Image (tube, rainbow, N blue to C red; front, side, top):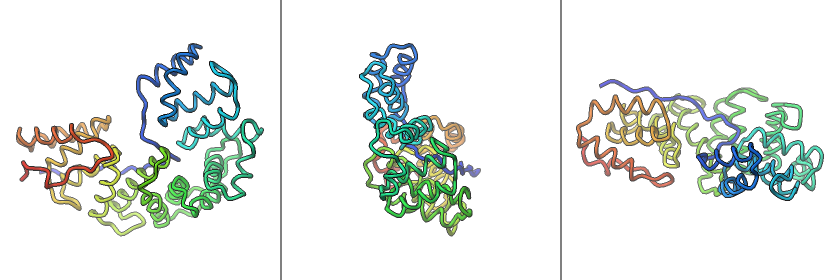
Length: 316
């Protein structure tokens, strides 16, 4: 039996939400680029309502320029904000410019942030982190993230964790990074799409840090627990790493059938290493075990509990 290797890559995006990208987004974008704004609106508006950042940004542009809709700077700003809160750099820049020139917004982000609005503080931190509408300044970004993070804003907590992990705008400190990731990761009941995304990334990042002993005591069992939390929300890297944990018996009882289930789930999302691992695992399993693993994977749905070892009947 050979050991499998994990994908030890931390999620470092400013914000990240589960993608809803697909053919409707592509069709809507193509229609917009071709000047067919009615068709673009038909495809993009429902997707924007569901939380797709690309659709939200394009819809913002349409309202900003009055393309296929009545021009409305306030509505444009609303859509830019929704996309910006998911880390869309173009939306962040557009929203930053609207605040800078007072178009479609009642007050500047800096004013709202100074008044203690945590969302505005996070937005302003992202603007400084990315140089969107302001001069890029990592230290200032950290200041605004910290103000919002201390109010419990999950995006700010996650972003602040990233800054401490990479040492951008602050002295690098893995232990402090883990603390902020944990604060975000434990906000598991948030409803907002963008908040959900960063919570899941924070859970995955904590799994990686416990796996490596980065900023926290190395603990394979705790790593597996955090991977499971993120994997149950559909995080492909977490599914893959948890699968490796089950295959190698790291922090969990060894169970290649469970590893097969998790690699199937990650591979279905295009995870290349999971595709490769499936082949390695398949060589160890019987036809009955492979069938059970494939069946469990096909029946499972994101945001529901993953199967446990009690659900696996063909191993050992």
